[in-house]
Length: 238
Length: 238
DNA sequence: CAGTGGTCTAGACCACAGC
DNA sequence: CTGTGGTCTAGACCACTGC
Image 1 (cartoon, rainbow over the protein chains, first blue to last red):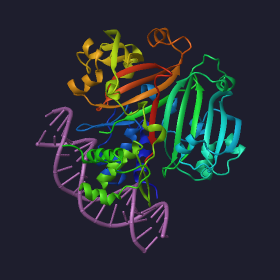
Image 2 (image 1 turned 135 degrees about the vertical axis):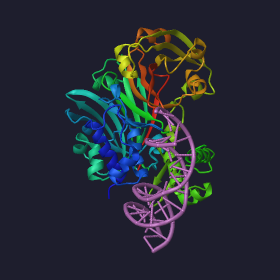
Image 3 (image 1 turned 180 degrees about the vertical axis):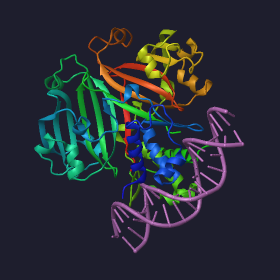
Image 4 (image 1 turned 45 degrees about the vertical axis):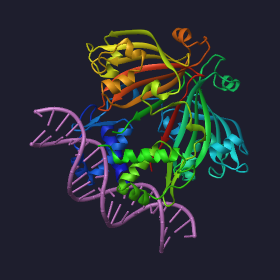
């Protein structure tokens, strides 16, 4: 059974996308929409909460619900809430991978703490260069917990690891912690990212969790400063 | 009247902080906590939702609610959900400001679109260097809508603009869109951030909204790569 | 099967904006 | 005062886990 509030959120998203509800325009009141979808007002509000957190809607008590005007932020650049990997994020581009290294090892003490592992629970270590439209895009240095992301092969790594996690392993991603920083280029960056020794690099360090709270990935991905940025929609509920 | 779910969230946060609920430990079941706080289970769950989104808790259906282990992410570095400016973020440090420029002007066409202004609605333009413990920390280039952030003075800018917005103007911040990128240093960066011409710079570009959805600030803040990073907790509710 | 958290309801009441 | 969205309830029922 699908969740009503997710279905409704999806439908509202579609209506905004198609311009049925236009920028700056007021939506029908919650009670009317609740009746239309034949749900309680609480459930409708929950659907709207999702869209508000995504930044599509904002609500003003005593006034109404409005479609947020977009301007800067509706397009391009990496979204904080995407977990499906580059392959899905860039449907119109050609995404390739170059596997720079792929092995299995025991985790360092630091990694044991981050991924909540014992010293004998192995991890895959993958260094992979993502290439978009023939240009080097992101250099990923990733560790996956072997017990969770089972039976990785070079073929999977060459295609989409997240697609494998989602479709074949049927695991659900629950969230991530990320740290974004700038850095000077390392020798590896210079070699693979088509960077010089003065090219700034954007680094995204992350721990990714399954929906049940188990961490399964630790990675650092680095890009040239002019190839990638990171956007965040940050709405305080009120 | 304060909101029950916020009070409960605050109390649970305190209990985690004080170790009453310890890392990895299971919390009392929702029904028991609901009884303890004398609220409905829905309300208790809403409090837990907040802490789950902050990454403090995670829940496993059929099992229980647990305190998330922290490791990497519990410390330092700029949090995505902070809106109260450096002065509050760094209570133990000495935060000073150097005002590099402060004037009032009409918005450019681009800025009109971003802040939803007419060409005759003025903006303050402030370039300010934030200095933490005597070291240059962030170079901010900010525009505020004059009609909203009224009567700015050099004194306010020297202290804390967000404190002024919150306490004196009694405005509520509702959220922000941010874009984070790396960049090469500009001449201004080199001059003020104690950077050389090869020092990478981290830039945070943001539009900040009031709780009612009105944008009131557009800014770009830049720091040396080794002075600042940006962390995000990104939990998909389930 | 028992026990956990997740969803959903129908309705009451509150807070706020604008006439 | 009316109409908007926000909070809260008490309880039903569902989904998942682990014994």
